[in-house]
Structures are given as structure tokens and as C-alpha cells.
Length: 295
Image (cartoon, rainbow, N blue to C red; front, side):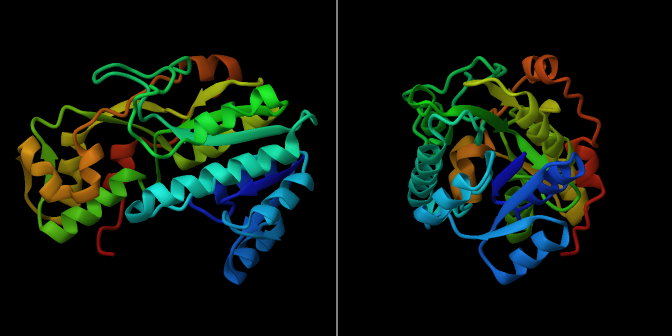
């Protein structure tokens, strides 16, 4: 298949593009810059110059492909509401080109809002309609199914290697700024995680085996305790580790406080059974232990 990939030059997008090409697929990768375009060409992908804000160009990219994997998102939490709206419009634009053609559209979401604290989200879990979260990637994508779009959703945990670790990368930056690696209360809240190469392989399997309207979990580890994450960050940065009170979280973590004391955990049992996906990469703690903290 010829696959249009948004976010093709990103942390997850680049391994996904490599995985697809290695499996014999052709990739049309979205790039915003000359540097990004060159990096895609160097790994054997065709280049589509565009951005999430360029709706007409997104439509052209989708129209030129047999399938679409939507990975792009503007990860600037200071403009989270605006960026979530850009994402919603991009998904609807892509979907408008795919309606009625039975071409797979794989959208990307997360685990937030799927389960009560202490409970594992499963692939059958539904985002609560009262969940106060502006990013509505999953809801927007699945709303395209009745319009004749063949949609499936990949829900991501904290995707990691020894360079990046999803939200944990923000926790590292805050620890550097504050001079202490902190966790809230007893640090018993957890983050699900998966190595980026395992995630890339899952996207390829979803492309090849997906069912319309299905939701898949890219979860290798169901939940890693925040206290353990804070400890390994403290060792890496050679700084103290401490617990802070819940009422101190916002002052310490800023925007990250919305995640710092919450569970984002999930099971991937259904995904593994349906797709034969068996993650083999290092765990989150193992990658954090091998990270170079001098940067």
C-alpha cells in the first residue's frame, strides 16, 4: 500500500515510516521543513510538504494514498486548546477524502479519560463524555465511521527510548529546573508505557489487519509507578528525590500537574490477541536508566 503518514518526521513517525518501508509498503510522508523532507527522502519515503494547518494540502495527501496514518500533533501545552482544534479539523479533512473508498484511516489517541483511578483501561473502554480534555482525536475519528470512512484508533501510552519518554520527558525537564525529582503523595499513580520500536510495529500491524471502528492499545507495560520514575530520574540527574503534597503539585509541576498524580494505565490484551503483537523492547525504567542526562 501507499501510505500517507502525518507526523512522519517525528519521534514516533520516523520509526513508523521505516517499519512500513521495511515491510514493502510505500510511504508518502508529511514534512514541514527542508530538513524534514531530506530525512524522509534519505530513508526511502516520498515527501509531501504540508502542515496540520494546511487543510487543502492534507486532503491532497490523503487523496494520493491507499491509507492514512495520522500521527501529527502540535505538542505545545501552552496552546493546547488551539492545537486540539487544529487536530480536529485535520482529522475531518483527511476523512472527507477517504469517505466511501474503503481506505484505512488510522488515527492516534491516548489513554486519558478512559478509566477510573486504579482501573485499567481496555480497548473496549469509552472516553467519558464529561472528561474535561480538549483533545478529541479519537472521538472525531470514530465519528467518521458512519460517514463511510474505514477508521481505527491507536491509543498511545508513554512512548519511549533512551532519548524521549512522552510525558516523562517533561518530568525530567521540570526536575532540572527545580533541582529535585518529585512525585505526588506516595507516588502510587502509574503510567502505561511502550518502546517506540514496538509502537511502530503495532501501527504496521493495524494497517495490515485492522477492523473498522476498532481501538488498539500500544501498551507494553500496563503501569509504571511515578515514584519509581522519579527515583531513576533523580539518580540520572544526581539530585534529591522527594514526595510533595497534592496541593503543592500545581505550583511545582505547572501544566504537568494534570498528569503528575493521575493514573494513565491500560491493558493491551485484546490488541495482542487480535494482531499477534508481542512487544519485545526495553521497559520504561530500563530506557531511563540508559539515558544520557548531561543534555
